[in-house]
Image (cartoon, rainbow over all chains, first blue to last red; front, side):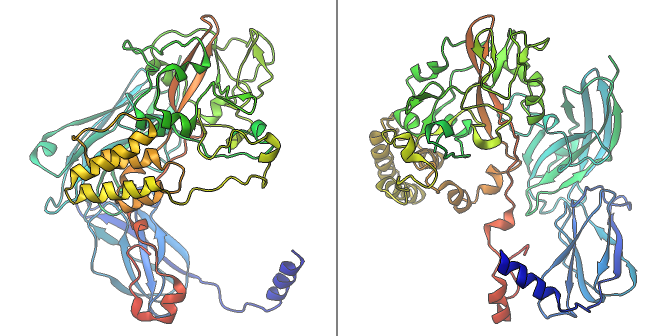
Length: 237
Length: 310
């Protein structure tokens, strides 16, 4: 213990005069189908940066997406970077962007989602929330197997796969309360023609909830393409 | 390791899940009409003619060790009507609702389901929770699945000989059963099913289990391996080797089998519930490969690019 304090004290005696990173890198991840920001969640996608001006083989640095499909990091070292959006529910991008980051740089990226949730509806019936949707597929060729549509419900506006009330998303298919829409199939005309209906039971009376659906495919990352977020209120006692 | 009372002070914090127990088949804890089966005694699961290997791997409620009984019980229902499935939407079994109430009187207040943070509290002369669990105030120190690990336990050792850092119980590194299971798996993958069957049945014969028939699948062999080699540091590496970790550990929660006493019937029921901490287990595909160590990459840049995702 004493030794570690001494070492720490010694280490601090040398002044770190290297300038703190102060460049800003920000922008939006755009859904190629809607032209709007990708419907995602916190860390539902990542912007991968490689600072090639630092070393030849830099370790990747990731900026996680925000729920609104934007990203921002205001502590970036100025330099030359290779940048690519990755680890999201969209087709892999092979064209790496080479860019100088200095001052404040705003850079949007356009991605092709694996799937789009359309015709999204929601209705509350007593203690149940019913959500329906259809799926469309911008690029069916080679689409990985579609796994399931998931319902997510939270008591705050931050709702997604990593922020939801667990008892409203029952993903164990041996559980009688299972409430995902399992697809487990490659894209076909049947899926395109199906209206999926998901029901969440057991909402408390007189509460406001935030809810959405997410669909994922069996790619490397198994992230979700989301519906918009809806606000629902259950009747009081 | 088992419970603190039985070992002077050592404890495990690792417990067999009900998912593991179900590898031997579901226990008949729910009637055909969906209501929970009533049992006269906590130990009645032991009368179900369970496989000897299961009973040698897992401590069930009602078993004894060094003079103590495994008396795990999560609470008391004053009365219980309806089906197990209906009840589970009321009894969500989260750490939050565990802490709702800890009655110290025999009335239990107005609630129907009574919990407690101490095994000293009683309701109508009956302990609300067991000494070995489920106790919300002791965290993982007591079972969170309804079971304890029996494998490795030397029941002849005295309690004082099992104090922390005192046990001389050997660790299982390898044994002949693994050789047979390795061979059965390789056999099956190569289409030599009769030899695979023979290997599996040598295992089952030793275990006191029902012999397998010719209609095996690869899952029969994998399940046999998971049953036989449980708690012998194999399963994690098997999941990776079989490339099913990302499917098995996909927002996975583990189940518990939780005993309750019904006061007005003087009966026990067992509810299959997600374990109280509701821990979620995930495995990302990129984890099948480790990153190349940074020190090696620094020595030899030709090793780049690193494995995907790192």
